[in-house]
Image (cartoon, rainbow, N blue to C red):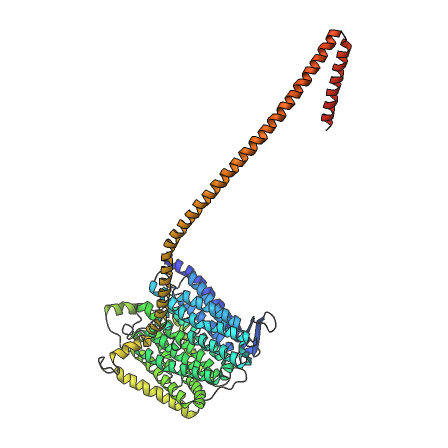
Length: 630
């Protein structure tokens, strides 16, 4: 019977299924373009030779279908987890995949920078997806701040490219003048090392493990971390033209492969082990770009993407079933669910570099290019190969051990992994087993005109011997008592803490910045503390100025009033005299008129009287008419 919860869950799954279908369709289309199209498929060129252009070329021909396929399979698995079964998660995953696609298709530095920034912002939102959990939000901020600090290198690269001739195309960076070319390449390499979690920036991967397992599966396999390696491969021609920078980059890549292999070997958390191994495996890609083995590096990226997506998704399913990601709690997990265990074991065997699986041959193809440049680098690379076998076999031994019997284990075994998850892992396992063959000829992942290095038979035998010998040593050590250790506990804790890189960054970078900010704040406080005193002094000065102004205004007003009074008095006296004279004149005229009228009346000449009256009336009427007309 279908419950209301089941109906709600199915409704929440719809966006994820729709997005997974769309990404699958896009993967088929891009794979077809890569196989059937020309060596360079221009998707968009805003203006000829402009800084706004997208194209499918070089390593992107192989990596873009890989990214889209892995993202689609991750979304299918996400439909089985309550945490990721939501519209918000689907929207963020769509934006993240779109930003990775834009990064892969970018043909110029400005377009690359746009995709690069969007990818970093989306990864921050996905790592801190559970926004109510402060630990996860802080982990997302740590990952973003570390990668953002190194992303400044891309801004330096854009500025150097503009100053060195205005060449913005990634394939033409070697055309820049020598000085500006080195500056631009150094900025690009810095950004790549940060995204690919190479030394000394590796520690942000440990914090990124706080995100949901599907996020870790995509971010650490084919998306954000892999984009650091992809960009290194993309600028390989320009990088190899700068021997000093290429040599430094090669040693950083080989050193990361060895150091992070030790870190992975010391972990007791399966997701932390896989995260450290991601940084180690990307070290081989960085090494390939520095020595000119781009085809092998591209094949290694594809094989690694399938392997890590498979293993991170398996770890997420076990976390969902058993409620733990600690190695002790996962003991025997592969035996409890045989199908899932078989798929995860295939991924771990490929990760170990066991012949003839995929990562064995891709690593040897990379090391074949290294041997011609530096035997010392080759030896360090073999150390990384051996450590890769060690941590992969360590996880395999734990997962295939006999499980402990307990009530909790019995209840967990009654649950089964969702069928859709197991089905989604099958293609990843097939690619993980057979992707190494892509390093044989210059196929989809190779740069046109490039012939990938082919390892000699003795190199293949040597690496296989290293893997097998390391595996036997790990197995023998696992049979010994837990108390016996090859390294001191303090060293073991240091390795488990990712070489103390995060603390070192806090001591070397964060703490000085905090002290500088504190000193600046103290200066500001002292300046602000003087504000009330200075304000009081200003108020007193203003009061004095106002008092003086009042006195001046009072004197001005008083003087003006006195002058005005005198002028008004004089004017009034003159007006009185004029009014008196007018009144006297009017009165005199009236008296004279009255005497004249009386004289007429006494003489009896009335007709003169009436004539004068009529003339006066006519004069009045004429005056009224003139006034009316005016």
